[in-house]
Image (tube, rainbow, N blue to C red):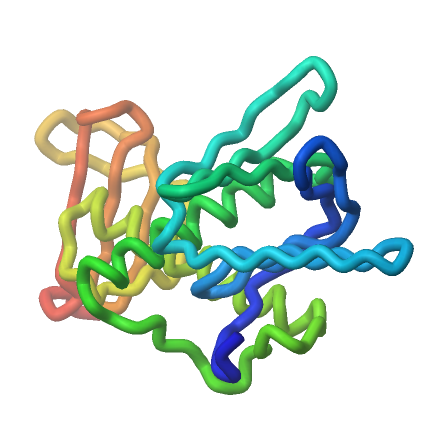
Length: 203
């Protein structure tokens, strides 16, 4: 694994190798999905690049109500017995999407060098990187919602009401504040949307 690889989070789970489950840990990093197990003198390792994954599925079977299936062009891998399968699957999808966008854009993932490398298992540092990824995902949804430039970063949002002079009403919705804009969207879909460049705001 490259020295600069960054670990995002890791989870206890079982990996099905044939018909035998191997209890161990799945490690989710910026570029790879990895699994490691060492039980009764037997070692099991798996390393998959996110860009090689063709499909992620959260399945339910009679034997295991919660199972994640990871498909590549040449193989299928099954993981089960997660403490929080929804969180794990959501993070897998997020990392796979990031890797695919990087491949299409030919861009690398820029990250603070102080964040953890794969060999370290500091929960505090790992959660910091996960928060960074969650913040990026929120900024992406924000940019898509208001069709803003790709470098715009969301600082925060809150519930509020907007007074609309044309019909003299208070409209319930959310206000978003980012680097260069203040935006508003109504709770009721397509009722009201507002984009205000901060350069036009006088205080």
